[in-house]
Image (cartoon, rainbow, N blue to C red):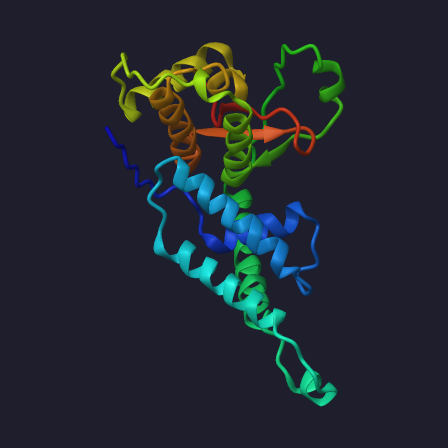
Length: 238
């Protein structure tokens, strides 16, 4: 049976582009289009592999990046032509800067109105607790989770994911299960929730449930170091 999911969970293609720029520590005014286009397309494929029906705007931006890349590969023979030629990245950079400005303003307003909601005590039980306790907590977003999930699936042998769906489960049921687990244990790692599952559909439902809970601001994901352990907890504890 083929499953298709359409969830309004992603913040948009410009958010993905900003994430890739930040991840690669790139100057937004001098974007290496070839690298960014390749990584952007990898993320699109990763999200498609989860049977997520992406909004058309993601594909539009993918086409735009490919077009810009092709324009920058065209040879220029005349120096005067170089001076007169408009940088094909200019419009994209303008959109990114404008979007980034409004996004940061919205985040600042959100913090002002909900001050104190994001403060919580660490209750890590891992053996690296002492080391991580000294580091600041950094909340992460959806694209970091997509990347972590993509790597996790890539590292797993194909035979480990059983195709036989002996357990019937819905997305709402998996959401409730995750909330119950977090109410009991307070904090779980991303691997705790996803990494030990061997049933393909339950694996996908778990990941989609995490994304939906993040969208609804019921849970938060965070790290104490870039590319480190991803931890998940309820946004507001009972």
